[in-house]
Length: 392
Figure 1 (cartoon, rainbow, N blue to C red):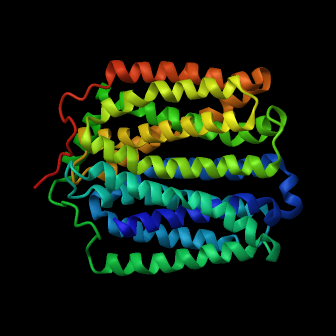
Figure 2 (figure 1 turned 45 degrees about the vertical axis):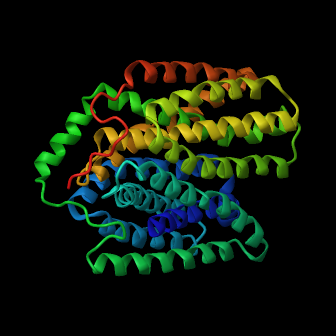
């Protein structure tokens, strides 16, 4: 469990350290808004597009091998930011990084859940996700603290960490075993693909995408809304706005292991449903206050509940559809479907914010009611309640 968590941390760290430095790295090119937006969009498209085929590749050759290859490619892409300053070059580098990240996610998911029973599956997955996602908090902090020495200094530090983890991953892959055990490679690929196709036809699968989809829909929107609303609606300084972003990472990191542990102890669906009302009420609370303290409390409550539901739903999905030789495919397809919300979210809610200001949080709550209501109606797991379907 430790190595997948460290690998995910490094991936998040490298992504997070570049985000605040991109304008400085690009120089005058940073004024080209279309190219800058294309750099981010290309990363997202490549990450989303590589997850499903990457997951099926994981099921074919094992998570350790795919993770090693993903980290090699990721390290190369991070090193690319040390060369040149043209946005067209960064477009190419970000595309490579997106592919590498899309391969790494299902590999890590499969490594964590392989040969895991119901007593620890959710907690282990939540712990890895929580530790790994903290890289998104440390990345911007690292970038900001070392940027005075040059934009490429913090990238060099993140690159050093990535190289070290990549070397370890190659050693593990060459030894032919994963840290959490080997995946079952006996089932024919046709049978594995048949199981994934059956999953895609299941109403339960699509119901399970709704809580995680809503999480990504709103989180991606808040990246654009918080700087605008924080300055204009709440009168916050740049430092306080940055603290809100740090709070996202902290709450997400803490909620993941808590949600996973609860999903191990109780039915994952029941855990998700229990935290939906406070999550939606917190969104309404964000729209009703203009004071920093009360907004922060409501905001932290929303992030915590949403992240906890995220962890419980991932356990629910693994319990309902995963086996040792399909975890990669399940993760890849599930992530691909839900990540589409990271494209829809900013387009939808930033436009609503433009005309509704702080009432955008009420619109988020309304969309959340629709998403969560559909999950409650169609998210009954009749075949694998609160247990991972592990092949002996």
